[in-house]
Length: 222
Image 1 (cartoon, rainbow, N blue to C red):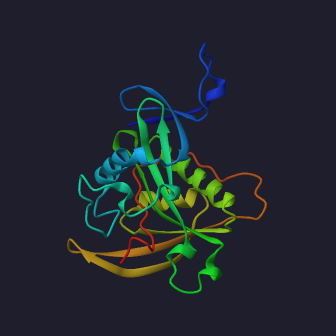
Image 2 (tube, one colour; image 1 turned 120 degrees about the horizontal axis):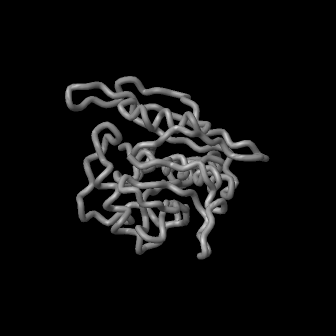
């Protein structure tokens, strides 16, 4: 399992300039610096691979995406944040959309809300804290968009994602009990929300290790 080190990259001595970001060690012992940036069109193949590899019936009510399905077929890069390293490229992502774009009516009434549609981390780096790095970036991006609220839905069969979201300030606001039934089980759909103060002195943080997440929200659920 990958480990997250409690070091800032500025604390590491090196003869070479280092990019900003957080240091993690993957399951082979390789040190990687994780930074979060806006998605680019050329991320498509790597993001599609991550989405394919991290899908499960525990994390999504939707069918598994085809292995060769373009990632940007259903979402624009401007709505995607990418966790990346200089050597591996994309290793995780979060999709964040304005609620107003998902509302057919009265869009102006929810202009203050952003929807965290999904978050995923490449399997080889699950447990390194990249999910938390992405959630921090989501909050910063939401603040840049002048939002005061971020909403997401997570299946009750994905308790790791629910715990991680809770550690970063998300609170359960509603639960659709028995919303889905498959594989002989009944699954709840859990609505969580993060309230963003108008003037934030900082961001919630947590030491909880994160596994692969897939938070399906309004846009994904038919």
